[in-house]
Image (tube, rainbow, N blue to C red; front, side, top):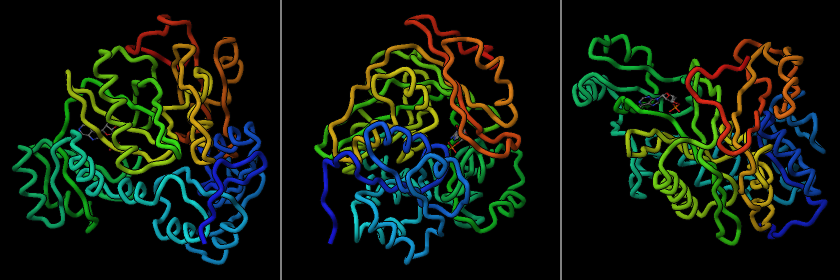
Length: 371
Ligand code: AMP
């Protein structure tokens, strides 16, 4: 029988699927609330395990290990969206899984996600389903050669994506897609990329954090700036879209919307059913941060205030950048977060910093540099 235990008391155990830095920061936030975390994932010595109460190192398909894990925790959550749905379904026989499995189903497949968003009345880039070479040719014609091909599943940080131009050799492109189901999206000449992190609690209460403007380098998030310079009505529209989705999904926990801004229009690029890199600034700049908010929600607690106390610029530290401790730490309003990863591979997210500023003092986005 499913355990019904909200609101969880201090000392309760929250199971987290996934072992990365998001799991680590969830564990830290959970510890402050008196919770213990039990991390589950296939990797050994991972960032989350280092600071959690317990770790199970096992495959997501290992039902014996999953059943034991489920019996040892009061609720299960996840820190990444590619948790197999069967894993989440299996666990939900024993223990509440929050956010709901439906959120995984929607977020794991770009075609399902786009159709879901459209059916919710929300705007997305025009898209077409690509299964055959004929579909690819038809999409090339429909989008007048200007599109982005994306595999439906397992794409991240620009992987599984190809820019399509009028000159693209479609035979070669189809070969690269290699039988993976895909979609073609219209290429959006956006003015900027923003995101909204929002949460919904067990009672249906919702809350949103301020919108962040995101700058990517080589398809990896580099900086998030808060506040954005967008008009108040667009900020409100984005917050309303997030709350609408939370309610549609009967969601519990934190969810992130990645959005393209095109003049005075917002188009949703994707949903992440989890805490998000573009919300890391909330740790140092808000009354309640995204990690605490998620833990409060999955534990059945009321949500905390998302009030922002500072302007902020969050910057990811990639590879060996974390070795510049002297430079990174010399400004007393720079908050440093290292993830405890053992190997500083090029491009790997090793940590982040948040630079805090009094209201109205945050630097311009144009030309902003880490050092
Ligand atoms: P995604 O994996 O969908 O988040 O895409 C990664 C990045 O590719 C986005 O952050 C955008 O910078 C860019 N991108 C994705 N889709 C489009 C699109 N339809 N038009 C233009 N740029 C896009």
